[in-house]
Length: 183
Image (tube, rainbow, N blue to C red):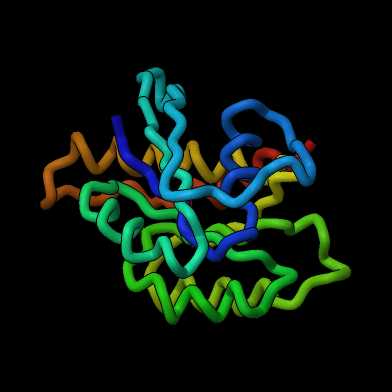
């Protein structure tokens, strides 16, 4: 299984994003803060091959950061999450999380309350050299695409020799976004 870890401040919606991906639903206001680590296994189809993602939901509170950092060594992907209505959750990304694989802000459905511009998120992702896409656990926007893109990238990394051209996750995400918005 491919270990993927959700990281970000407490309350940014890591658990909501995971529930939306795993169960296809949004449960407003029903989660208490994660203590330590929780995880879910989900099998997805990538190019006709079943890929098992083990998705870890980490505690975002400061007191758990030293514990959750210990789990990063074995992870194949980190999803760095922040809440677009909380500038502090965005600013804390630079301060607390030094290794990033994917950056997926959530709550893209609340644009009227936006405190972090899309351009700022995209700029941070470019700075780290990682893909960027806004998601919404509430509406489901881009949630499945985000996890499928990760599964596709990790599957490709596992089978491809280092000297061959890599799967271009940025291109894949853009092509899938265009497909879903064309009709």
